[in-house]
Length: 513
Image 1 (cartoon, rainbow, N blue to C red):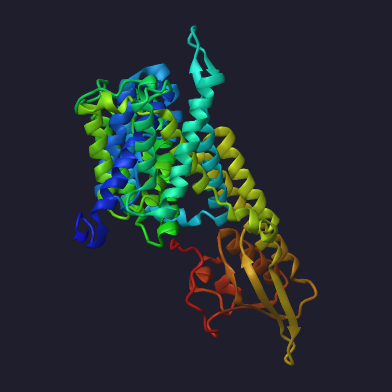
Image 2: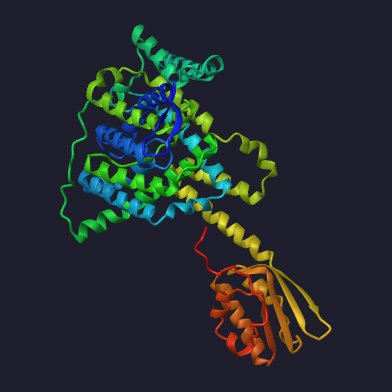
């Protein structure tokens, strides 16, 4: 049944059945993830579940990407571990609130546009690293605690049962879409495997073996902390990192979903929604979070394209916590593990292997580096940041080598330098080497019609060049130089005749991206 739904966005054609079933699937997958991330941070399971509910609900309603799912994440959990150990949970709630304020301000200042600076090789490395991380995180489900509480790898019959159920889940998810699209394959796999385990009383690991999810509505709670400068100095560094990590992961997830669904999300709107969600989460006993790529891909692969699926997922998660904990705790972890493994397989950019021989070596290095950092450190934001820095340095190095000049002397004895390439901090040395100041004639023209002055280093290089010609009493003209460049050249009024040339409209230091 297809109708039109308007939830804070322009009307879009959606399928209610698909949206509801996709949301239910995501809700089931959220349970073990939220619990695991809360435990990683040293918090109670309900802290992660409450975060998944409030983050998911608010971002689904107000976010910039309708089908994206947000909740408690490992990236945020890793940041908060040290603060939990040293100062306790009250500081966590305050940190999450402050991080939300930072994200909200970032959205209002429209800083989301800077995600466009992430190159494609970095995206490849990010996605591939994430796929490996998702897969490796599922290996923990093949461990059980011994009598002393130490985790050990499964052996014998328990291992055989676990592997069989995981493979059955994966088989259903792979095969069912080839037979019918009537119901989401992921939800079907979870229900079938759960029915087998419960119906035949199969002894295997369940959600309840991880932790209890029984609870009530998230309680409103103002962090019990003294509001003073000392408290702010403690939480601000953590809040800044949480805000940065959350924005990077959320905006990259938005870009990934845009590519898959061929849509156009709104990065600044998502940043503001993430900020508001974290503020609310901090006041309602949650650990904070950001976009969840695994759950978002489950949602997309199940056919969801609208906000309804995320709303259903969040509401159903709260229903599980309040009314159906006993039932949900019986779900076999094998079914959820199989689902997440299929997500990791679907997430990996297998096409990167096909094009690797056609990619520049620098791009291959960036892609592999980002992947390795993601896998080894489990820090997606750091991996992306390092990838962007490497890509920027490679671009600067290559651009620095590509500046050159066409030289000739006209019939009037005037020497012309027609510059080609970018003049910036990296190419200043190459630029200076192009001029023969001592042997040049009395009048020189430098034409910038095929060149651009990019930064203040380029401006300073022009200043020094004009000073060198001035000392020798030579006349220098700058042709096709932008007006703002001329204003910054402090010696221009004395030695440069610039008014006789028509200048272009480009600017030297632009804030547009």
